[in-house]
Amino acid sequence: MSWNITFISEKDLTDHVRATIQKYGDKLESFDLRRFNKNIVDPVKLIFDKTVYRATWEETIGNEIFRQRDKANNNDIGYFHQRIFQYIDKCHVPANGEEGGWDVIYENPDGIKLPDGSVVHRVYVEMKNKHNTMNSAAAGKTFIKMQSQLLKDDDCACFLVEAIAKKSQNIKWETSVDNQKVGHKLIRRVSMDKFYALVTGQDDAFYQICMVLPEVIQKVVETEGENLVPHDTVIDELREIAKESSIEGTDLAFAMAIYMLGFSSYAGFNSMLTPEIVKEMQTSDRISTYVKMILKNSYGTDNK
Image (cartoon, rainbow, N blue to C red; front, top):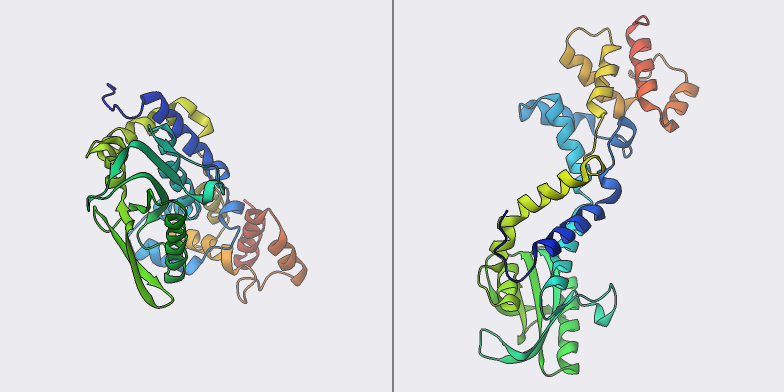
């Protein structure tokens, strides 16, 4: 891959991508049935999803695993968006909670020209992944923080930078504080592309990053190999459970295995088990073993 980006080196972006992937941490660990059902999945929803979306069981289970992993990934992507600026000239990324808690500070001794013609020498950034992640109370609190910074430093602006904004923009941010509409020309709402353009001097800087990102991520994943690729066993374990059933039809047997993940102690499902076994099953780490037991007892299946 030829490298034509001038504001960040290939090595720096690769190192940053690697650090971001490593932030995923235990979310990269493989899913077995025990982990899959840690918070008890909703069997009825899974069966609706599988049927309505005309998916296979492999796709349905894979989507649920992806959903569980994805719930915790937003902070990791926030790390990517924020910390990349440590590699860009004149940008500084403070340690968490330090220097006022700002995500990025951009300083330019030659001056920073804003769309309305104002010139400042520092920009303090609060960064958000998406335009709708703040409620009115959080927005008001953030605005007050920025207003306070302007009182401390009369040669700065404060930006609310959104990775996923409603549109490309660098506008005066208007919000509500104590039910009063407030705004200031030096407190601005800025999309990620406009912030990249400001700090690099290149209008399409963010586009350039996006164009090389898939290949850089792929290279890191291939280099790290087994350390980054989960090997999920949920579908295989559920197949084994379904095999233990005497129910005719693979699809229905698999559905019964899914039901057992959430309804193992419900009337009908546990009719062949003693209260002691049900209690032990509910607290056991070896859920798949006990689901097999339920299927055998409930449907009179002989050991195979």
